[in-house]
Length: 478
Image 1 (tube, one colour):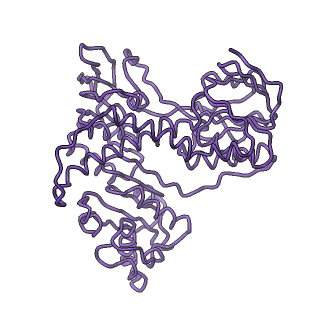
Image 2 (cartoon, helix red, strand yellow):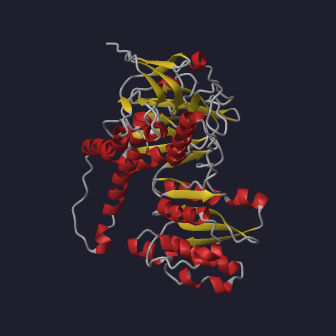
Image 3 (cartoon, rainbow, N blue to C red):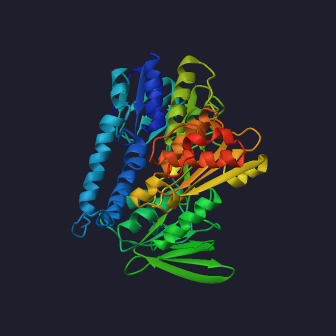
């Protein structure tokens, strides 16, 4: 069934993820007659196929892990029984609740944005008109592309036998074994979560270390923890040659220095990168160009090569994270409707992953920091802080990097329990341009995970010989 509209909008947003939601809300707040078109459900990948369902699965994995130490705290229970079908029901409950309560839907509706969901792929019919697979046709003076990204696929023979992380999250039963190709953030999450569910995991990384964008000590610590938990980690393994179907799953052939090997599993999941989701957009009909990496080319104001078309979020290939996508949406909508030249500011951007163990970072790695600064570093291990000992989560560390001359915090890297939350505190301190000595004076509560950061700040301050500045958070055990 097709439908058309004679109404012309001021602003038309394509894509209902974080960037698209915020762009539509901002345009509506500014008084623009706005429409939002989504291929699938409102909320995009973040709500339906990304952080929300993944964090729910990871939470279940943590509950299974935590159940294993109940006896240490005098709590007698039976052996936990894992029901994956029930977990999937819970995932859908969470996704539905987030779409209903935690997205911008109510605000968007309140400013009169016309929302069109489940329209299929949208493409430019001409420079100001889009048409969708469902038959919807809409025109606007300004258009903002927020279609996000999608998995990069392998092109070797038999690659059609492999699955993506999205396929993994959609499984209806727990596989006996999984080969995960790609040791970045997504691959590590797939490996960690399904390992907790009892799947035999083999994690393959072409480079010399998993989590290559993390600090080297973080990569090493997570790899060691993965191996200790039973995951087979193969770094620098060579080149994938092909895949073939077997009676029980899929076999992967790979080679290095002329030597061939193979590995087999029930399922092969590839997580080798994230590319712009622009298939079917027919960008040429609007004069929108892409860059050499295949992302939509934008300037500092998020305008594309077509002056009336803007782009925001993952589709631009810049910082492909939810907070940055939200900021992009705000900037793009403001510039599109108001003809302003607002730019996206260079923000402190914490990044973390809900693996077991967790890891997180903000700022520069130690290697990058040393290239441009005279630095001081301090590390506190989790087996020496009160809260981690209380909780029985003593594996991990918090590392702080500061400039010797300015005392400014250059980076924070954490592995272990609540790593993501600890790093958020460091990000706030960095955004406020605090010196490490100033952070050490904040009397963070005891015993807390945030207090771990205060203690390592005190350790760093002492190394700078600023002894009069460290006592507030420097006591043992915070």
